[in-house]
Image (tube, rainbow, N blue to C red; front, side):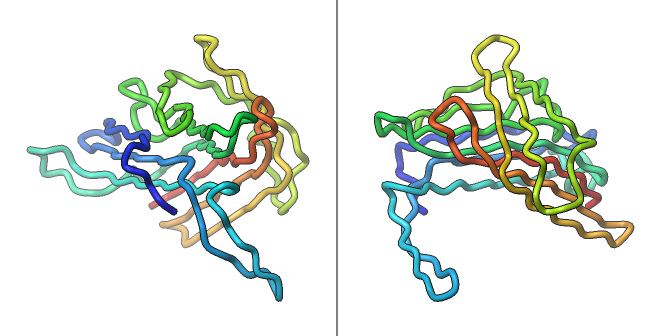
Length: 199
């Protein structure tokens, strides 16, 4: 994956867990090239087709404090992302989420159009978290993502679910990551996830 010098990324630094700060950087629509193997079949990856994404995050104590630790022990977040192409060939990406840190200071919500970030404020997610199944294939109920200011109205329809669980009692993680299509831009393929963790 390559990151052209002029390509913008979504970056925020916000308060989390008292005296700590959370750094979050998301990059969408990175040109990707190479190859992958599935059994005996080799699949070429060309920049004109798929695109990659990158996520970097870190939590640190604020300057001048003695408090140690990284991120909040009990963590929860919802994250949604996609990268693709419009009908006219321009790249389009989405990055949206909530639950991690004080997003009243800044959100990670953005639309990325042709390598330029267009910030979104609040985005409301509507989905049935009690419906997140314990099996691999979800029942394809749609998620809705809307912005109260009217700048975003999306429907995300999952077609497959990835579940990952780790439970060491003190440390645990459970993520339900749905892969599907965002219905607005030619069925843009991406994912949406709900994650609960104890670090």
